[in-house]
Image 1 (cartoon, rainbow, N blue to C red):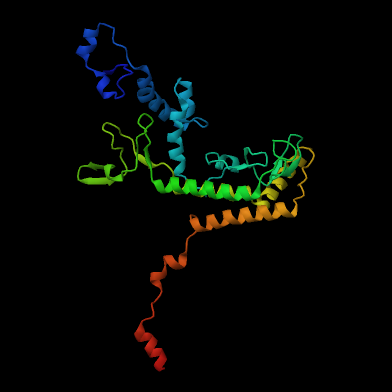
Image 2: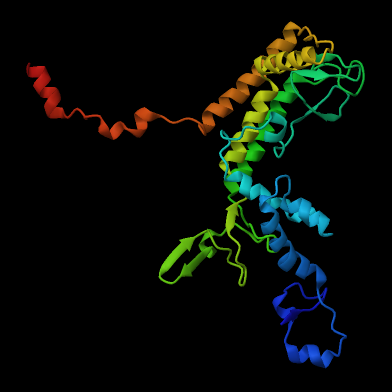
Length: 305
C-alpha cells in the first residue's frame, strides 16, 4: 500500500492505495511526501541521531524541511520524566518553558518582569520595579503585580486540574480528558491511560501539564522576587568579571517602598510553593503506622497507676 496526497481527506488510512490501484493510475497517482517524511523518515533519523549530542527532534525536522514546532512536543514529554531536582541546568534553561510573568506599568502597557536586578541599556543595574524600557518614570505598579501574580498562578493551577492528556506520537497529537477511553488490552492485561485510543496509533498518552511543570512555574515566580538569589547571581557575575579583568557591577540601592513590595510578592510566592508541597515529604506522617497508638485501656491503666 502507498499513501496518496489528498487535502480533502485528513485520515491517511483512507488515502491508502493497493498495488492494483497504483498500476491503474499509470503514474498519475501523487504520493503524500510530507506524510512519508513525518511518519517514515523522521522517526528513523531521530532514533539514529539520538546518541548524537546536540541534536533533537525539532532540529532534525527542520533539516528535513518539516515544521519543527510539531516535534518539540515529544522532546518536552521526555524532559518531563526527569526530576526537577536532578536537572543541573542554569535557571534560564530550567525555566525556558514556563509562562513568563508580565505586569502592568504606569503607562498602561504590560511588560515582562525580569527580576529584582535588571541591567539597562547602559550596562548598569537598576531595580526591576523602576524605569522599565518604556522610559524614565515608567515603573511597575506593585499592587497590580500582586494581583497579576495570583492570576497567573490560578491560570496555571486550572490548567493542571483540567487534566488534559496528549499523545506523544509526532503525527497524532490526539488530545483528550476522557481517561475511560484510554484503555487498551494486550492479551489479558489492561492498561489505563497509556496507549493512544486512536486506531492505528502506537503512541502513548502523557499529561499535557504535569505537577512538575506547575512546581517549576511557581518556583520561577518565587525566584523573580528573591533578593538573596539576585545577590548571589550578582556575586557570581562579578567573580566572573574579575577573572576576565572587567569592571564589576554595583547593586542598585532599593528604596524602602520597593523593598516592602518585593518582600510581600516573595512571601506570596513562598506561600504558594509551601501549599503545593511538591518537594516536601513528611516522614512523620509517612511512617505514622509504626508508632504505637494509645488505646483507651492503656490510658485507663495509666490513670490507675
